[in-house]
Length: 197
Image 1: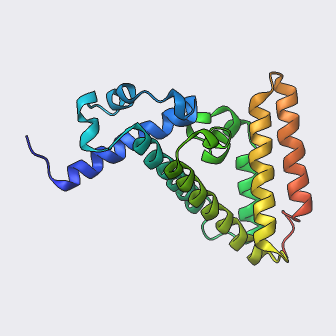
Image 2: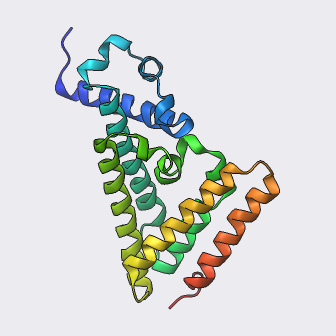
C-alpha cells in the first residue's frame, strides 16, 4: 500500500516523538530502534523509509526535542511581561516536577553529558538548539533591561542546566531540593525577577 506525503510526515513525526522520549529517559546510547518503532505503532522494517541510520534518527530527534522546548516556552510565556516570563521559566525549570519528568524535560540537561560521544550532526543540532534557547532568553532579558543580555542568557542557561543535572544526580531528596532552591533563589535575586521595571 502506498501512502501520501502527509501520512509519511505524520508517521515520521510520531517516530521522532517516541525517539525523543527514549533519548531523554535513557540517553542516546539507550535508544533501541525496534522499541521506538513499536511504540510508534510501526514495524522495525519501516525504519529505513524514514531515516538513513540510527544516528540520523537521534540527530532528528534532538531537533524535535528543541522544537518541543520552544513550543512550551511560547505557550507558557506568551503576552507576559519579561520579568514574569523569566520568573515563570526559572520556576518551571528548577521545579521538582521538571527534575522528576526526565522523559519530558529540557533537552539540554538530558543530553549535555552524552553529546561529546555523538556524531557531528547530532552535536550541530544540539548547538543550534542551544543557540535558539539562549537567543530567546537574551531577547527576554533585553526587554527586562539587562545590560548584556546575551552573556547573561548564556550564564543563566548554564546555571539552570547545571542545577537541574546536579539535582537529578544526588540520591537524597532533601539535597536535590536544596540544589534547585538555591539556584532558583540566586537567579531570581540576581536578575531582579518578580520586581517590575
